[in-house]
Amino acid sequence: MRITVVGGGYVGLTTGICFSHLGYEVKVVEKVPQKVSMLNEGVVPIYEPGLEDMLKDSLRLKRISFTTDLIEGLEFSEVIFICVGTPQQEDGSADLSQVEEVARLTAEHMKSYKLLVEKSTVPVNTHKLIKKTLQRYMKRHVEFDVASNPEFLREGSAVKDFLEPDRIVVGVESERAKNILQKLYEPIKAPILFTDPATAELIKHASNSFLAMKISFINMISDLCEKTGADVKLVADGMGYDKRIGRAFLDAGIGWGGSCFPKDVRAFIKMAEDYGVDFSLLREVDKINVRRIENFIEKVKNALWSLKNKKLAVWGLSFKPNTDDIREAPSIKIVSALLREGARLQLYDPKAMDNFRRIFPEGEDLTYARDMYEAIKGCDALLILTEWEEFKKADLERVKHLLKLPIVIDGRNIYEPAHMRELGFEYYCMGRR
Image (cartoon, rainbow, N blue to C red; front, side, top):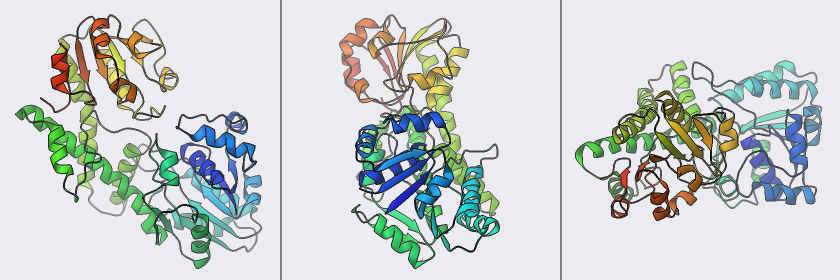
């Protein structure tokens, strides 16, 4: 079976490369010529563990190719995965213009049966708009199907999530579409949940919003723990033993970011509002997340008093470890707030510094370090914003020696408070004694 993937972003690349790894012939359509050139040379423009090695293998085996020509992609396969961006608009809704463009151009040029598969995160009933667009712009009578197959990829572990998923969700309206997608996913040993397209579209938004709600919930509990002297980690452990709750996504910190949770939660709220459904619960989930930045900045001020001319080290700029993605990363707002307070910053991240430089160029009050130890040299305090594994394994005696003052303000709770006190640190964390 051949597969066409439209969109060479995070989801499109992971989808295309993983399908080619499974043995399918794949053509990925991407608008940006520079990205197409890089990809055809075996270079992935994003950081995702394992993805570039798989790409090089697939190129060597001639299982994958990249093009800017959508018509070429449409002629290549009868199965078209739509993986284009659906960015958030000012009112919180998703911008579906790229999805509409793919549907319209497909309708104008298709000469034989096509199965269009939504993989981009879209509002419920987008499949109906795709069908309507196809019918409206079709120049000849050709059969087609539209299906929903939402992605559940976590940045940093996307390859594993694709090849070893908890479940595969497929929303279809015909046996033909069901049989094609069932055969396509046969090599992946995971349960497939077949639904109607609207249900599949909702599953994606509901899943991400529920996970975001868990994080905001434990962050709310974290604030109470700080006021009462309780330990949020032990609270989370105690909750997590309950199989109905589970321990995952119950780590207190500075909040969620990235390309999915912020956009999907707000889009879900707007979607419900458009249908006259009260989603005030999710509004509060989003508010709690926004307040995490204010809480962290207040914690820094309480530890250091005035921030003016204070030299601060920042470890971690990506919104989570094992990615270079800084979209909606808490670090962006925290760094902005620290600079407004007059602090001088030394930043380090294993993968995200190039992306961060595009927003915060190096200057008198902000520099980038070559490694995590260079970043802390002579600083009044260390701020931890991302829980990279190398930070967890840091030589803490060396950290203490390099810092001007032994102050660590940990937004991700990567160290044990008692151990840090034993080493002689002033250690401030989230919701722990």
